[in-house]
Figure 1 (spheres, rainbow, N blue to C red):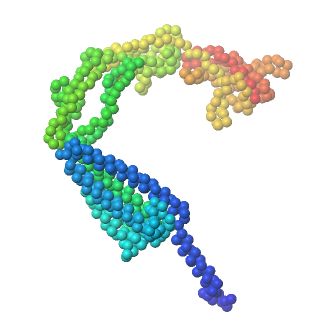
Figure 2 (cartoon, helix red, strand yellow):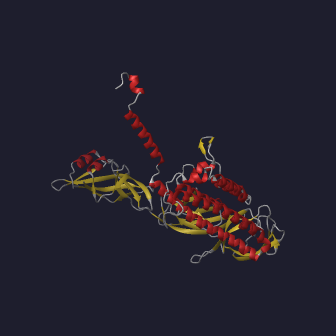
Figure 3 (spheres, rainbow, N blue to C red):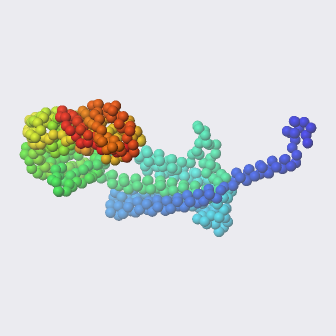
Length: 526
């Protein structure tokens, strides 16, 4: 073929040139091809936007109907807003219909005179949108941009809220998007929207634009409907309040309360009268002393100055209940107290802070611990009485007392401590097979009360193990305190699968200082 390396690089045969040309043509065809999945996706978006447009249109019609109804009842206040709303509706419908005509014209270029916007045959047509919106004969994209700009300025002029105005300006913006960071596109808005755009995509974009137009119309109509009501009372703060029938209820009865929104003007406080007298403060705070228990009613009215200079009056009535102080004393763990240990106690007086409560105890000591109390009784079998006083209005008052029985701690249960397959601490209490390797790894015997009410550790003082030999003879071995002795470990090593070891004569001492004999453990070797 070529006589040198350079010639083989710079000169190609006719066959090679043809292959390269075919590759370029194929690449161009692939670039122009739009998959059916993408076209179907545009069709689905178009259907969804059309449904949304119908919904928004119905909502806007309902808002306009409310303005018409208000105008019929009160033309003096409603006519100015109805006239403005009519202008907005008219401008919106004209722009909406114009966009509709553009969609139909694009589909005509793609499908012919019998075209149907809702059933486009040549959805992938890439020329129709450009011919209508961009070419010299069409060029309607520029007209559309001009009309959108004019409509945007028109509708935003009715909005006082800068945030709402900004939202509408963004929704109806005709500024071409940036193509790179800090780089504004060199194309116009209409070129970005419709140049080389499939027919179905162009129709979908126009439907989305109609959606934005209807959204803008709804925002303005809703603002106008709100402005009608603002002519009565001006408010700038809305809070939620709970108004109960009574703050004190008896067990077995119903608690009733109204949950309401209250709107006020913080720049102009209302005047409040209670039982015929004007409140001295401007915050509506009503305070009254309580000297004896009972139910008390009160009523009055509120006066507020409207924006038109008229005074609006609203009456109210309510009630409150005064009860005698009552202390609540309860044992956190049980209805009894245990001697020799710290018993958590909860003491509360309704309406009195913890710092104003004090308490004393007979047959033991009672100390404050955080928000609770610790009772430490001494003598088993005797009663202890906890008495509570509270400081109210600068005076200390006895608000109640409760009597408790004092019991001895129950016996603990012995167990062998080990770690399960997940490495978590566990307790073997006998009566079921126990792996021999875990038994040999155990240090000895522990004891505790862990019945979900009390959680108290005991110290094992001593214990014996009893293992039966092949002749049936019992061989006892003594522990080394709470630890297995060497003789016990030697005997345990000889245990085979299914054999038993009895841990008996267990002695343990609790926090009350009493040493007691506790239950044995039957160990089954697995």
